[in-house]
Length: 108
Image (cartoon, rainbow, N blue to C red):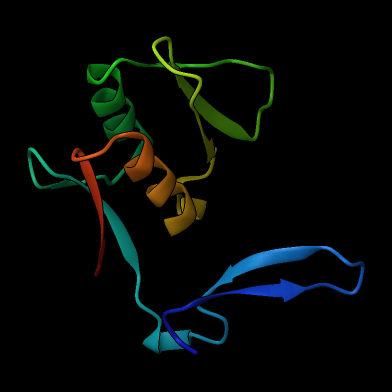
């Protein structure tokens, strides 16, 4: 099942999308790529600089666990875990969908 996402149902009735269940060493890591520069987004400061150039602004709502960005010209909100090591392909694809033709997610 390596390289896939599946819904896992927990004992408390809550379901969660899990990436690469049992993936181990065979699991493929994903990276977010800024297409105009072919630059791999390697930090939130790098991502924030690109998003700012696209009209996104930091959104502060008092939640210390997330970085959030919003755009005045839309109702979209990008919410990212404060810890970059927890930046997953789910958040990457969210950024891709909200910024068409600017970002791409690739396997490493």
